[in-house]
Amino acid sequence: MAAPRLFRLKAEVISRPEAEAATHLPIARIWVDTGVFHLDTPFDYAVPKNLSDAVTTGVRVQVPFGTREVEGIVIERLQQSETSGRIRQISKILSAHPVATTKSLELIAVVAQRWSTNPSDVLRLAIPPRVAAVDKAYTPQSRIARSVMRTDADQLFLAFDPFENPAHQIVSQIQKAAKKGSVLLVAPDEHDLDEISHALHSEKLTHLRLDSSLTRAERYENYLKAMDAPNCIVIGARSAIFAPISNLKTIIMYKESSHEHFEVRSPGCNVRDIAFIRKSLESINLIFTGYVPSMELSLLIDTNRLRFLNHAFKLNVKSFASDDGTLLPGRIFSDIRKALIRGPVLFLVPRKGYGNALLCARCKNLAQCTCGGRLSIGSKNAIPRCTVCAKDFPEWVCTWCNRTKPYVAGRGIERAGEEISRAFSGYPLVL
Image 1 (cartoon, one colour):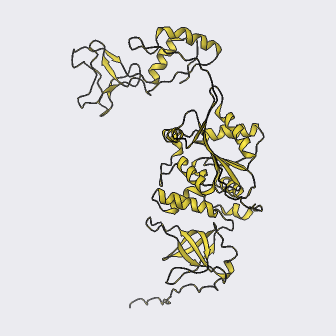
Image 2: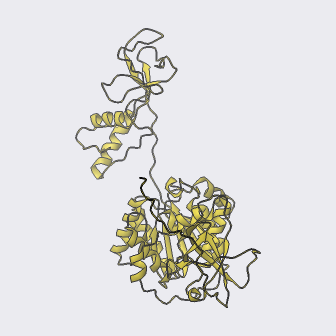
Image 3: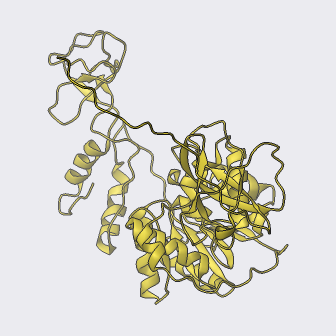
């Protein structure tokens, strides 16, 4: 006898009934994180009456998109939509606290257009991820009205003074700028931020930090505080350039020529260009700092579009020509020994490694592999190895004169360290 089949109830999926629509500005224009690159335009959604007060510019919301529920951010409220078809409603509010302002959203739109990317990619870079616990516990301060856009905003390059810690020099600039309003400093990496943060603490200057060294909760909370504080000092890495800081008057770009100011992932933007865009939108003072300006800023300085500010210093510079390929000419030893009595001496070496090129000690023929790549050695007694195919040559022979003694031509930092340590044996060497 066949087993009886189980009785199953039929289920029908129906759409959620729509709530009553808001009467005032019933349409919200939203950037939706669709995950589809070419869908880079905002979408219009109806605002339910019960969410009308909370749906403001910069608020995170959840909206239906196709068969999914996705995250979006409100750009603006409208009285009427330009869409002719059916308009779906916002599902819920994800965060009661706005995470963007009208100006910051305008900046994100310009950056997305300039670097040909979806605004969602820029939003992920600009706004920290939401932390629900922080949203519930955070109490926003009363925000001050933003000042009228100025036309006298300045832009300049400030050259660091030699022989002084640049972190201490930048603190004095922050103190001056903080008298006018909020200050944003963007540094290349965590090490620089640690130094600047320590220098600010030593001067008893309260500041907020925005970078990946913080926990998600700390970073999100500092981001919300920066939006509300009437006058504050904010320091952060490259993504902090988008931060919608209240009453922002000055942006300082620390070590402007550093490659760390360039975003390696999409959208591939850089802090310097975004700072110029933000200045055009908000009329903010820009201060670029470093020992020397980058090529891009040098052009602006030469064409009188950027002020160059530095202090005159007289440095004693001596030049010594190399003798017979030696690392240190004989005449320089007395000057180095005198300098070592006063303090540390810095040697700058252009190459890493040990021996980046080998020559025949007799005929000076370049040592090459059969594939055409040059040979190098990784340490004093290492076997010569091809830099292209990694083939070892334990019994290397010169192809021209058949001699077997190599000569290290391309000194790296490790080989230079050996020679410097032999020349000044009484002093410790740090690579």
